[in-house]
Length: 433
Image 1: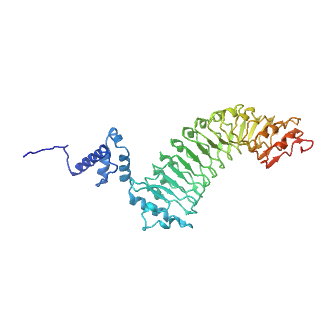
Image 2: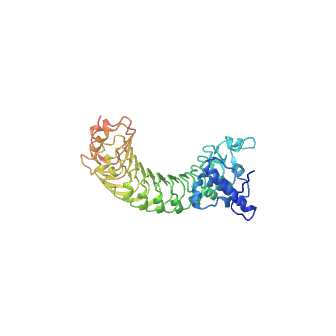
Image 3: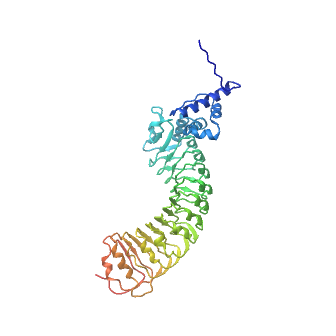
């Protein structure tokens, strides 16, 4: 008859024994590559068990975070109750989107709700374009596994709840085209995983929170068409992954921060229709990835860089109209061969319009309301360089100082041309047949 005696670590009481057993269960789960682990017991003891040294914590992978969220951030029932609170704030649902939100179905089968397979926790709430009327319940902050919140194109009102800042896994926050009011919550910066933040087309007021410049993963940030005031935070230059920043149609003032020139991945920069002044930082013209730049309808001054067509090789849409630019149109603009739209109207530009022969994709060219031309016979020769594009639909040359006769090549412009404006110049002679 054989006997065996096994001694483990000494424990003082049953509580400490539970902590030790829990910790050993977690360690075994990782070593055995189990996909799930169910722990029953006192929450405080579970938290003590997983509060192991950082060196060991890293070995637990997703298990540590999932246990932490389950204990500290609720469970399936928490999600169900949060969704019911969300439904309670909806006062009109004409499409009956939420008719399935009842006890006849598991909440993971409710319309617009997506759950993760492992935990059956809500990971996405997509109710976009549903004509919903109401406000967002603060209980949305209890959906601790939520990664995507898509509510755009509805009629949500009142303020964006501060509790959204508790959603540490949130990657997409899409709230555009509603009637949200109040300020943009600064604690959205507490969502470290956020990549897309769209709040445009609302009634938001106040300044853009400086703390949003700490969101290191942010790729898309759109807040156009609101009532925002103040300056563009220089901290936004730290958003190194930012690809789109649009703040058009607000009441922002001040200068454009030099730090925006650090955004080397930027593709769309929309600052139009504000009250910005000063000069565009030269570094912005060196962001070669930009394909849309809108600075129209501000009080920006200065010259357009002579090498703009070389430093912005991917530019497609360039809106600079209604500002205070002086100088001439750079000859290099013809090198921006992807250019589709160029609006330079209502500035103080002078001199000769250069050849545009390389702009084969050009569709809109607007230079209305400048001081271009000198009344000479060759002022309009550049028109002949536009016969290379078959996409031209708008050519606005009116209210300048162009002189001479219309060149015969004007008859060779694109058959797609819908607008040709030449009034208020010094043009004479016959219209070519």
